[in-house]
Image (cartoon, rainbow, N blue to C red; front, side):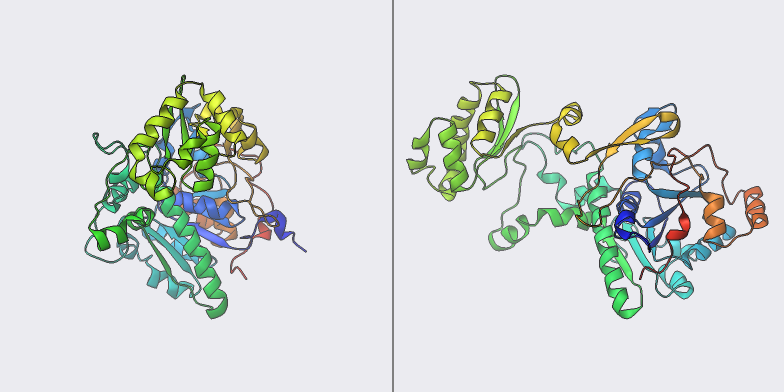
Length: 423
Protein backbone atom coordinates (compact mmCIF):
# COMPACT_ATOMS: atom_id res chain seq x y z
CA UNK A 1 0.00 0.00 0.00
CA UNK A 2 1.32 3.45 -0.88
CA UNK A 3 2.40 5.71 1.96
CA UNK A 4 0.30 8.81 1.25
CA UNK A 5 1.81 10.67 4.20
CA UNK A 6 5.21 10.34 2.54
CA UNK A 7 3.92 11.52 -0.83
CA UNK A 8 1.80 14.44 0.37
CA UNK A 9 -1.95 15.07 0.60
CA UNK A 10 -2.30 15.85 -3.13
CA UNK A 11 -0.59 12.65 -4.23
CA UNK A 12 -2.52 11.08 -7.08
CA UNK A 13 -3.53 14.37 -8.72
CA UNK A 14 -1.96 15.44 -12.00
CA UNK A 15 -1.63 19.10 -13.02
CA UNK A 16 -0.74 20.39 -16.49
CA UNK A 17 0.82 23.82 -15.92
CA UNK A 18 0.66 26.20 -18.88
CA UNK A 19 1.44 29.90 -18.89
CA UNK A 20 4.49 31.64 -17.52
CA UNK A 21 6.03 34.15 -15.15
CA UNK A 22 5.07 34.11 -11.50
CA UNK A 23 1.42 33.63 -10.48
CA UNK A 24 0.85 30.43 -12.46
CA UNK A 25 4.20 28.81 -11.63
CA UNK A 26 3.83 29.71 -7.94
CA UNK A 27 0.35 28.15 -7.84
CA UNK A 28 1.81 25.04 -9.48
CA UNK A 29 4.69 25.00 -7.01
CA UNK A 30 2.25 24.99 -4.09
CA UNK A 31 0.37 22.02 -5.54
CA UNK A 32 3.63 20.21 -6.29
CA UNK A 33 4.99 20.81 -2.78
CA UNK A 34 2.03 18.87 -1.40
CA UNK A 35 2.44 15.90 -3.69
CA UNK A 36 0.61 16.66 -6.94
CA UNK A 37 2.36 15.57 -10.11
CA UNK A 38 2.85 18.92 -11.83
CA UNK A 39 3.89 18.82 -15.48
CA UNK A 40 5.03 22.28 -16.53
CA UNK A 41 4.89 23.09 -20.23
CA UNK A 42 7.50 25.68 -21.22
CA UNK A 43 8.20 27.16 -24.65
CA UNK A 44 11.33 25.67 -26.22
CA UNK A 45 13.39 28.70 -25.13
CA UNK A 46 12.09 28.52 -21.56
CA UNK A 47 9.68 30.37 -19.30
CA UNK A 48 10.60 34.09 -19.17
CA UNK A 49 10.86 33.84 -15.38
CA UNK A 50 14.09 31.88 -15.95
CA UNK A 51 15.62 35.23 -16.87
CA UNK A 52 14.46 37.04 -13.74
CA UNK A 53 16.46 37.41 -10.56
CA UNK A 54 20.01 36.42 -9.74
CA UNK A 55 22.08 33.88 -11.64
CA UNK A 56 24.96 31.52 -10.89
CA UNK A 57 26.83 29.54 -13.53
CA UNK A 58 24.41 31.14 -15.99
CA UNK A 59 21.54 29.37 -14.22
CA UNK A 60 18.50 31.07 -12.69
CA UNK A 61 18.49 30.64 -8.92
CA UNK A 62 14.84 31.69 -8.87
CA UNK A 63 13.87 28.99 -11.36
CA UNK A 64 15.57 26.34 -9.22
CA UNK A 65 13.14 27.27 -6.44
CA UNK A 66 9.81 28.06 -8.14
CA UNK A 67 10.11 25.11 -10.55
CA UNK A 68 10.90 22.62 -7.78
CA UNK A 69 9.03 19.32 -7.56
CA UNK A 70 7.83 19.72 -11.17
CA UNK A 71 8.41 17.71 -14.33
CA UNK A 72 9.40 20.04 -17.15
CA UNK A 73 8.63 19.62 -20.82
CA UNK A 74 9.43 22.02 -23.67
CA UNK A 75 6.60 22.42 -26.17
CA UNK A 76 5.59 25.06 -28.72
CA UNK A 77 1.94 25.78 -27.97
CA UNK A 78 1.63 28.01 -31.02
CA UNK A 79 1.71 25.01 -33.33
CA UNK A 80 -1.19 22.70 -34.13
CA UNK A 81 0.94 19.72 -33.17
CA UNK A 82 1.88 21.24 -29.82
CA UNK A 83 -1.77 21.97 -29.07
CA UNK A 84 -2.69 18.38 -29.87
CA UNK A 85 -0.01 17.14 -27.46
CA UNK A 86 -1.58 19.30 -24.72
CA UNK A 87 -4.96 17.73 -25.39
CA UNK A 88 -3.41 14.28 -24.98
CA UNK A 89 -1.87 15.35 -21.67
CA UNK A 90 -5.16 16.82 -20.45
CA UNK A 91 -7.00 13.59 -21.23
CA UNK A 92 -5.05 12.01 -18.36
CA UNK A 93 -4.98 14.94 -15.93
CA UNK A 94 -7.01 16.47 -13.11
CA UNK A 95 -6.13 20.16 -13.45
CA UNK A 96 -4.98 22.58 -16.11
CA UNK A 97 -3.27 25.68 -14.74
CA UNK A 98 -2.85 28.70 -17.01
CA UNK A 99 -2.20 32.42 -16.76
CA UNK A 100 -2.43 33.64 -20.35
CA UNK A 101 -4.48 36.68 -21.31
CA UNK A 102 -8.16 35.63 -21.61
CA UNK A 103 -8.95 34.33 -25.08
CA UNK A 104 -5.45 33.05 -25.85
CA UNK A 105 -6.15 29.39 -25.10
CA UNK A 106 -9.50 29.63 -26.89
CA UNK A 107 -7.70 30.77 -30.06
CA UNK A 108 -5.50 27.68 -29.77
CA UNK A 109 -8.42 25.32 -29.26
CA UNK A 110 -7.37 24.79 -25.64
CA UNK A 111 -10.11 26.73 -23.82
CA UNK A 112 -12.14 25.17 -21.04
CA UNK A 113 -14.95 23.98 -23.33
CA UNK A 114 -12.39 22.42 -25.69
CA UNK A 115 -10.60 20.59 -22.90
CA UNK A 116 -13.83 19.63 -21.15
CA UNK A 117 -14.79 17.76 -24.32
CA UNK A 118 -11.57 15.77 -23.94
CA UNK A 119 -11.92 15.26 -20.17
CA UNK A 120 -15.22 16.24 -18.44
CA UNK A 121 -13.54 15.98 -15.02
CA UNK A 122 -10.90 18.59 -15.82
CA UNK A 123 -10.60 21.58 -13.50
CA UNK A 124 -9.09 24.66 -15.13
CA UNK A 125 -7.29 27.10 -12.84
CA UNK A 126 -7.20 30.42 -14.70
CA UNK A 127 -5.14 33.33 -13.42
CA UNK A 128 -5.32 36.61 -15.33
CA UNK A 129 -5.01 40.33 -14.76
CA UNK A 130 -8.72 41.16 -14.61
CA UNK A 131 -10.54 37.83 -14.77
CA UNK A 132 -12.30 35.99 -17.57
CA UNK A 133 -15.26 38.40 -17.75
CA UNK A 134 -15.89 42.14 -17.52
CA UNK A 135 -14.85 45.16 -19.61
CA UNK A 136 -11.15 44.92 -18.64
CA UNK A 137 -10.72 41.20 -19.32
CA UNK A 138 -8.62 41.71 -22.47
CA UNK A 139 -6.20 44.21 -20.92
CA UNK A 140 -2.65 43.03 -20.28
CA UNK A 141 -2.02 42.80 -16.58
CA UNK A 142 1.01 41.79 -14.53
CA UNK A 143 0.77 41.46 -10.77
CA UNK A 144 2.06 44.95 -10.04
CA UNK A 145 -0.55 46.42 -12.42
CA UNK A 146 -3.30 44.51 -10.64
CA UNK A 147 -1.90 45.80 -7.35
CA UNK A 148 -2.20 49.38 -8.61
CA UNK A 149 -5.82 48.88 -9.72
CA UNK A 150 -6.78 47.04 -6.52
CA UNK A 151 -6.10 49.96 -4.20
CA UNK A 152 -3.44 48.01 -2.29
CA UNK A 153 -0.51 49.83 -3.92
CA UNK A 154 -1.99 53.19 -2.90
CA UNK A 155 -1.81 52.21 0.79
CA UNK A 156 1.91 51.41 0.73
CA UNK A 157 4.57 53.90 1.77
CA UNK A 158 4.79 57.31 3.39
CA UNK A 159 2.06 59.88 2.71
CA UNK A 160 4.50 62.46 1.31
CA UNK A 161 6.09 60.06 -1.20
CA UNK A 162 4.88 58.16 -4.28
CA UNK A 163 3.53 54.70 -3.34
CA UNK A 164 6.44 52.23 -3.58
CA UNK A 165 6.28 48.53 -4.36
CA UNK A 166 7.61 45.62 -2.33
CA UNK A 167 10.66 44.18 -4.10
CA UNK A 168 8.92 40.86 -4.80
CA UNK A 169 5.98 39.91 -7.04
CA UNK A 170 3.55 40.22 -4.14
CA UNK A 171 0.25 40.18 -6.03
CA UNK A 172 1.36 37.22 -8.15
CA UNK A 173 2.00 35.27 -4.97
CA UNK A 174 -1.35 36.25 -3.46
CA UNK A 175 -3.09 35.18 -6.68
CA UNK A 176 -1.19 31.89 -6.77
CA UNK A 177 -2.43 31.15 -3.27
CA UNK A 178 -6.03 31.87 -4.25
CA UNK A 179 -5.64 29.72 -7.36
CA UNK A 180 -4.38 26.76 -5.34
CA UNK A 181 -7.13 27.25 -2.75
CA UNK A 182 -9.74 27.34 -5.51
CA UNK A 183 -8.29 24.20 -7.10
CA UNK A 184 -8.62 22.18 -3.91
CA UNK A 185 -12.21 23.43 -3.38
CA UNK A 186 -13.13 22.51 -6.96
CA UNK A 187 -11.61 19.06 -6.50
CA UNK A 188 -13.75 18.62 -3.39
CA UNK A 189 -16.88 19.48 -5.38
CA UNK A 190 -15.85 17.09 -8.15
CA UNK A 191 -15.73 14.25 -5.63
CA UNK A 192 -19.50 14.72 -5.26
CA UNK A 193 -20.47 15.62 -8.84
CA UNK A 194 -17.85 13.97 -11.03
CA UNK A 195 -17.61 17.18 -13.07
CA UNK A 196 -14.86 19.80 -13.25
CA UNK A 197 -15.18 23.58 -13.41
CA UNK A 198 -13.22 26.82 -13.92
CA UNK A 199 -11.39 28.54 -11.07
CA UNK A 200 -11.30 32.18 -12.23
CA UNK A 201 -8.61 34.07 -10.29
CA UNK A 202 -7.92 37.74 -11.10
CA UNK A 203 -4.73 39.48 -10.01
CA UNK A 204 -6.48 42.75 -9.19
CA UNK A 205 -9.18 40.95 -7.15
CA UNK A 206 -6.62 38.95 -5.20
CA UNK A 207 -4.86 42.14 -4.14
CA UNK A 208 -8.17 43.95 -3.62
CA UNK A 209 -9.28 41.33 -1.09
CA UNK A 210 -6.44 42.49 1.18
CA UNK A 211 -7.89 45.99 1.63
CA UNK A 212 -11.01 44.55 3.23
CA UNK A 213 -11.15 46.97 6.23
CA UNK A 214 -11.39 50.03 4.01
CA UNK A 215 -14.35 49.03 1.82
CA UNK A 216 -17.18 49.31 4.40
CA UNK A 217 -15.44 52.39 5.83
CA UNK A 218 -15.74 54.16 2.49
CA UNK A 219 -19.30 52.97 1.94
CA UNK A 220 -20.57 53.98 5.38
CA UNK A 221 -18.38 57.00 6.15
CA UNK A 222 -16.84 58.15 2.87
CA UNK A 223 -13.34 57.50 4.24
CA UNK A 224 -10.72 57.28 1.51
CA UNK A 225 -7.81 55.18 2.80
CA UNK A 226 -4.39 56.85 2.55
CA UNK A 227 -0.76 55.91 3.01
CA UNK A 228 0.35 55.88 6.62
CA UNK A 229 3.97 54.79 6.35
CA UNK A 230 4.84 51.99 8.76
CA UNK A 231 1.86 52.70 11.02
CA UNK A 232 -1.29 50.56 10.97
CA UNK A 233 -4.21 53.01 11.32
CA UNK A 234 -6.60 52.64 14.26
CA UNK A 235 -4.43 50.11 16.06
CA UNK A 236 -2.17 52.01 18.45
CA UNK A 237 0.70 51.53 18.98
CA UNK A 238 1.55 49.58 15.86
CA UNK A 239 4.53 51.21 14.20
CA UNK A 240 8.26 51.20 13.54
CA UNK A 241 10.37 52.93 16.18
CA UNK A 242 13.96 54.12 16.04
CA UNK A 243 16.49 52.62 18.46
CA UNK A 244 20.09 53.70 19.01
CA UNK A 245 21.36 51.45 16.20
CA UNK A 246 18.39 50.64 14.01
CA UNK A 247 14.63 50.13 13.98
CA UNK A 248 12.16 47.87 15.74
CA UNK A 249 8.45 47.33 15.10
CA UNK A 250 6.21 47.27 18.17
CA UNK A 251 2.57 46.17 18.18
CA UNK A 252 0.58 46.64 21.38
CA UNK A 253 -2.93 47.72 20.40
CA UNK A 254 -4.84 45.61 22.92
CA UNK A 255 -5.22 46.87 26.48
CA UNK A 256 -3.48 43.90 28.10
CA UNK A 257 -0.53 44.07 25.70
CA UNK A 258 -0.24 47.84 26.07
CA UNK A 259 -0.16 47.41 29.84
CA UNK A 260 2.82 45.05 29.47
CA UNK A 261 4.53 47.51 27.13
CA UNK A 262 4.08 50.37 29.61
CA UNK A 263 5.54 48.22 32.38
CA UNK A 264 8.51 47.19 30.22
CA UNK A 265 9.14 50.88 29.49
CA UNK A 266 9.05 51.63 33.23
CA UNK A 267 6.06 53.89 32.62
CA UNK A 268 3.08 52.02 34.11
CA UNK A 269 1.34 55.33 34.66
CA UNK A 270 0.56 55.48 30.93
CA UNK A 271 -2.31 53.06 31.53
CA UNK A 272 -3.87 55.48 33.98
CA UNK A 273 -3.58 58.41 31.57
CA UNK A 274 -7.01 59.03 30.04
CA UNK A 275 -5.36 59.65 26.65
CA UNK A 276 -4.02 56.08 26.55
CA UNK A 277 -6.21 54.05 28.91
CA UNK A 278 -8.30 52.44 26.15
CA UNK A 279 -7.72 51.34 22.56
CA UNK A 280 -10.01 54.05 21.21
CA UNK A 281 -8.27 56.72 23.28
CA UNK A 282 -4.88 55.58 22.05
CA UNK A 283 -6.10 55.81 18.45
CA UNK A 284 -7.19 59.39 19.08
CA UNK A 285 -3.79 60.30 20.57
CA UNK A 286 -1.52 58.29 18.32
CA UNK A 287 1.04 61.05 17.66
CA UNK A 288 1.65 61.77 21.35
CA UNK A 289 1.87 58.09 22.31
CA UNK A 290 4.30 57.32 19.50
CA UNK A 291 6.43 60.28 20.59
CA UNK A 292 6.65 58.86 24.13
CA UNK A 293 7.50 55.35 22.92
CA UNK A 294 10.06 56.73 20.46
CA UNK A 295 11.85 58.64 23.23
CA UNK A 296 12.16 55.36 25.13
CA UNK A 297 13.36 53.22 22.20
CA UNK A 298 16.08 55.72 21.29
CA UNK A 299 17.73 55.15 24.69
CA UNK A 300 18.76 51.55 23.91
CA UNK A 301 19.93 49.26 21.12
CA UNK A 302 17.64 47.10 19.00
CA UNK A 303 18.99 43.99 20.78
CA UNK A 304 18.22 45.44 24.21
CA UNK A 305 14.71 46.60 23.32
CA UNK A 306 13.79 43.40 21.50
CA UNK A 307 15.04 41.26 24.40
CA UNK A 308 13.18 43.35 26.96
CA UNK A 309 9.90 43.30 25.03
CA UNK A 310 10.05 39.59 24.22
CA UNK A 311 10.60 38.91 27.93
CA UNK A 312 7.58 41.14 28.70
CA UNK A 313 5.46 39.21 26.17
CA UNK A 314 5.02 42.23 23.88
CA UNK A 315 5.02 41.54 20.11
CA UNK A 316 8.13 43.27 18.75
CA UNK A 317 10.85 42.51 16.22
CA UNK A 318 13.70 44.06 14.32
CA UNK A 319 13.32 44.21 10.54
CA UNK A 320 15.08 41.05 9.36
CA UNK A 321 17.38 40.91 6.35
CA UNK A 322 18.00 37.66 4.46
CA UNK A 323 21.31 37.45 6.34
CA UNK A 324 19.39 37.62 9.64
CA UNK A 325 17.07 34.87 8.42
CA UNK A 326 19.94 32.51 7.61
CA UNK A 327 21.37 33.07 11.10
CA UNK A 328 18.06 32.72 12.97
CA UNK A 329 17.51 29.52 14.95
CA UNK A 330 13.73 29.57 14.58
CA UNK A 331 13.81 29.45 10.77
CA UNK A 332 16.12 26.42 11.03
CA UNK A 333 14.04 24.70 13.70
CA UNK A 334 10.91 25.09 11.54
CA UNK A 335 12.63 23.76 8.38
CA UNK A 336 12.08 27.01 6.53
CA UNK A 337 15.57 26.89 5.00
CA UNK A 338 15.77 23.70 2.95
CA UNK A 339 18.97 22.54 1.22
CA UNK A 340 18.76 20.30 -1.84
CA UNK A 341 21.13 19.25 -4.65
CA UNK A 342 20.91 21.56 -7.66
CA UNK A 343 23.21 20.04 -10.29
CA UNK A 344 26.09 22.31 -11.19
CA UNK A 345 24.85 24.84 -8.62
CA UNK A 346 25.85 22.43 -5.87
CA UNK A 347 23.58 22.46 -2.84
CA UNK A 348 21.07 25.30 -2.88
CA UNK A 349 18.88 26.64 -0.08
CA UNK A 350 15.24 27.39 -0.87
CA UNK A 351 12.21 28.36 1.21
CA UNK A 352 10.50 25.61 3.19
CA UNK A 353 6.95 24.30 3.08
CA UNK A 354 3.95 26.38 4.18
CA UNK A 355 1.66 25.38 5.86
CA UNK A 356 2.87 22.54 8.08
CA UNK A 357 0.50 19.56 8.02
CA UNK A 358 0.92 17.26 10.99
CA UNK A 359 0.12 13.93 9.32
CA UNK A 360 0.52 14.54 5.58
CA UNK A 361 3.23 17.18 5.19
CA UNK A 362 4.53 18.61 1.95
CA UNK A 363 8.18 18.29 0.95
CA UNK A 364 10.87 19.64 -1.35
CA UNK A 365 11.77 16.52 -3.33
CA UNK A 366 13.94 18.10 -6.01
CA UNK A 367 14.80 21.55 -7.35
CA UNK A 368 13.93 22.98 -10.75
CA UNK A 369 15.38 21.16 -13.73
CA UNK A 370 16.68 22.48 -17.02
CA UNK A 371 14.28 23.30 -19.87
CA UNK A 372 12.74 20.13 -21.28
CA UNK A 373 14.56 17.78 -18.91
CA UNK A 374 11.50 15.52 -18.54
CA UNK A 375 9.97 15.87 -22.02
CA UNK A 376 10.57 12.36 -23.34
CA UNK A 377 9.54 10.66 -20.12
CA UNK A 378 6.29 12.63 -19.75
CA UNK A 379 5.29 12.49 -23.39
CA UNK A 380 5.71 8.71 -23.43
CA UNK A 381 4.01 7.96 -20.12
CA UNK A 382 1.24 10.58 -20.03
CA UNK A 383 0.57 11.69 -23.63
CA UNK A 384 1.16 8.12 -24.88
CA UNK A 385 3.46 9.29 -27.69
CA UNK A 386 5.81 6.78 -29.29
CA UNK A 387 9.56 7.31 -29.64
CA UNK A 388 8.94 7.93 -33.34
CA UNK A 389 6.30 10.59 -32.56
CA UNK A 390 8.67 12.36 -30.20
CA UNK A 391 11.56 12.28 -32.68
CA UNK A 392 9.34 13.65 -35.45
CA UNK A 393 7.96 16.48 -33.31
CA UNK A 394 11.42 17.34 -32.06
CA UNK A 395 12.71 17.53 -35.63
CA UNK A 396 9.83 19.90 -36.45
CA UNK A 397 10.73 22.13 -33.47
CA UNK A 398 7.45 21.39 -31.68
CA UNK A 399 9.26 19.71 -28.78
CA UNK A 400 12.33 21.49 -27.47
CA UNK A 401 15.52 19.63 -26.74
CA UNK A 402 16.57 19.18 -23.13
CA UNK A 403 19.25 21.79 -22.37
CA UNK A 404 21.19 19.82 -19.78
CA UNK A 405 21.06 17.43 -16.88
CA UNK A 406 18.38 17.87 -14.26
CA UNK A 407 19.19 20.22 -11.43
CA UNK A 408 18.07 17.82 -8.74
CA UNK A 409 19.06 14.21 -8.43
CA UNK A 410 15.64 12.89 -7.47
CA UNK A 411 13.58 13.59 -10.57
CA UNK A 412 13.47 9.99 -11.70
CA UNK A 413 11.61 8.73 -8.64
CA UNK A 414 8.97 6.12 -9.48
CA UNK A 415 6.42 8.02 -11.55
CA UNK A 416 4.02 5.07 -11.66
CA UNK A 417 2.84 5.99 -8.15
CA UNK A 418 1.27 9.21 -9.33
CA UNK A 419 -1.71 8.90 -11.63
CA UNK A 420 -4.60 10.95 -12.92
CA UNK A 421 -8.09 11.20 -11.60
CA UNK A 422 -7.48 12.05 -7.98
CA UNK A 423 -9.93 9.92 -6.07
